[in-house]
Length: 587
Image 1 (cartoon, rainbow, N blue to C red):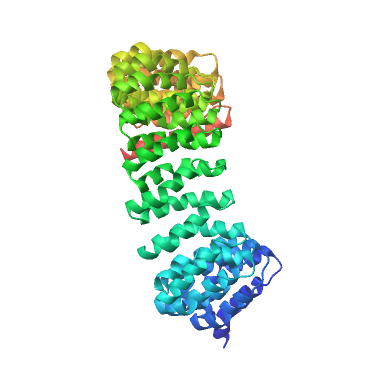
Image 2: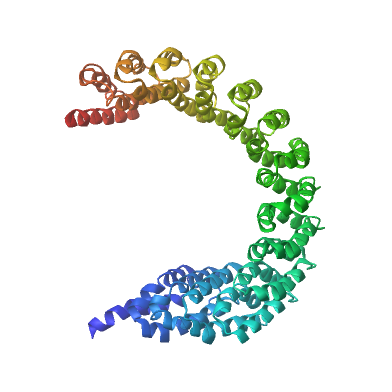
């Protein structure tokens, strides 16, 4: 008997915890529901635990949210799919609570369970839940019901299908805007399950009502419905039903609705096809690019490249480019930033001549923008333009601006330029690089911001890899080693880091002759931070150097550092000595 009681004892505790005043204990118990269910067995879970949860009137949203989540994966614990319906009552209750995130999670769990249920169980158990929620007195139930129609509908017989469509139509005309919003946002999912014949009649009339709703929050969700329904309808029906709605929404009195159109325009274009997009949506898009609300212009500017891909280059140059020119000097920095993040992609669409004539001046004006994010967005996409106009033109027109940005007062802009340098170097070639950018790379090693110095050291390593050790020996190593005498210890530390990064690229011989003496010399530095960084660098160099050099030069230096008065220097020196011994033993 003792053996029988043992597993039930923790269950009793867990169930007590579900009633405990301490919210954390209740939460822990809910999160361990699967443990309770496994111990109780499938039958007792169905007959005792689930009814207990249905009656559990906890008022803490956190506990209810955890419960809604747990129940969604509970089918295996109640005896599989044939008993899945027992999970519906507690979830139905959770669909009526006031807290939105709890309701959303309960709807998500209902959908997950409904998707696994057998067809006759859906008719017997799931559809009644949908109908009860849709007829709920409190708006929260009706809101939740909108999210589960698409699960119930496919399994329903014809008569029930007709009833479900009617109920959904009523929800779309509900007195509460929250219910109409939920119906509008779920319309696409529901429509995807409906037969084509009913789609054109009933669903399109429901959709028309939503597009004329007096609440802008409902209309803007209907914009999403445009794209979803457009994918379900035949192209011709799309042009008849969806296109006029998009054009009308692009002139809606509410800026939020216009913003949604601007955001979704590319998807809407896909629905109506390129031909009708060119004819009807270009004027609508131009209006959005010139909208008097900055938010709408930001959304429209962010889609400019995608939209141009649908058009012919002539149409893009004729209609879109004038707007792009206006946006490049827009009063809102966020509009200019959104434009800068995509404008480079227009180059391949417009072709070489139009890019040189029309786009390059816009790039240059954005590269000189006072707002750093605008400049950053242009720099990070330069390679797209290079592919179209070639490196010669790019270097003549844009390089002076890049050099200017290399000394930008905002460190993030300088950082973006540094990260772009290796790519630029590989495109420009070694000769051009030496003339124009070599000095800049050295200058960054002495920047006031650590992130820039760090990136500059990594940049030198990548350049050495790109152009080879011989080039690096001529153009990088002498200038780097010169800077080891900088009076400020932070700059000396950057040089040590650069040495440890360059050594593997330069190889054993150059490291031994040129780099190692500088590191050994720095071990006599008066600043402890330099000395323990010397120990770190020496540890990194050991695998590259010959054993004899390690024994004669590196180890004596580390032994000396291991007796330093500073505790950190001693720690790193001993760590490096241990690493030396391990490498020696393994080789």
